[in-house]
Image 1 (cartoon, chains in turn green, orange):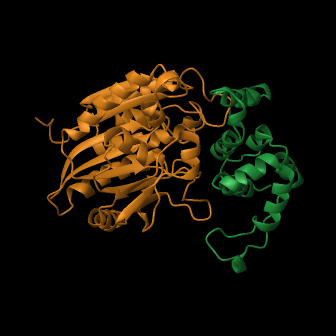
Image 2 (cartoon, rainbow over the protein chains, first blue to last red):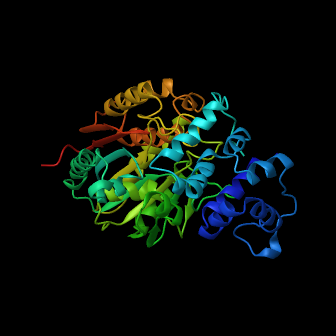
Image 3 (spheres, rainbow over the protein chains, first blue to last red):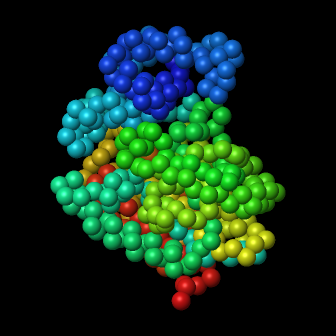
Length: 121
Length: 287
């Protein structure tokens, strides 16, 4: 399991307006493309200097494909990154603060309580 | 030597700009009180007539990333562009450009290294809302040069709380040993109890009002020892999963000094998190 790679996905998508829309509309295709093209890209280097070893597990791929923020939290993905990206994708479909509150409620209903999963990478 | 004219610590609420500029039906019911409190707070800084602002904040995974993560970083550049696409998107924050004070940044880096703080640096830093929120609230003209100081309260492993206090103490000495006739204010922002991306987020109040009450008391009375006795990297998980941002307040308590009572203390209980504002005058209140 790679919390780092989950965070890298959330980070690179959240900061790019085109990728935010693409991940909202086509999560499975975006995750597949991202793992192939971006997972091993060193972010401040040219493509020739790619890493060679980064890949999602099946469960990580599934959580990202299904926009499953509860499972991402359980896996130790950074909660700020997940929240920010998911607000960008889904707040527009809801009234003021409605999405943020539903997001938290889904976690409470799933039984998430202290101590939370470790987010250290 | 430079004079430290004000020490200012506060929360940074990214929705303040939107609340302040909203009108009609979009204006939230708490906006007027919030704007009035921020205006009174701004006056505590501006009456000291600072020339330079040292701005303590924390990047929220905007430029600093896990492939190369500094614990403490000083920005040394002639300019700092500010705010990011995802902050415009979520908070409606404007793009800004602030001037840098490179001579002070160079001094902080040299003097900090010589005081055993292995500070990282950046010569091209786009700052985020942890620094622009206090600029917008306290100095909306954004006309003074700044030196950004970023801390890692965000990506564990984090430095210990006592290290934030130590850096605050040192930062004050470093500013006061800068060979300059400039008037400097040190402004730092953090959080009280806060939950982001967890089950306790976006409630009617902050996630832990009792922690907030104690935290305000520690800061207002300069009770560094009491605060350090109760606060640890482990304990900060309990009040809310983003409460490690409180360590930036601890840094600012270090700047202000043990037992130093704040001259200005104000709070505002908002949805999601409590706002808190503090000002100290190291050399007495201005006339």
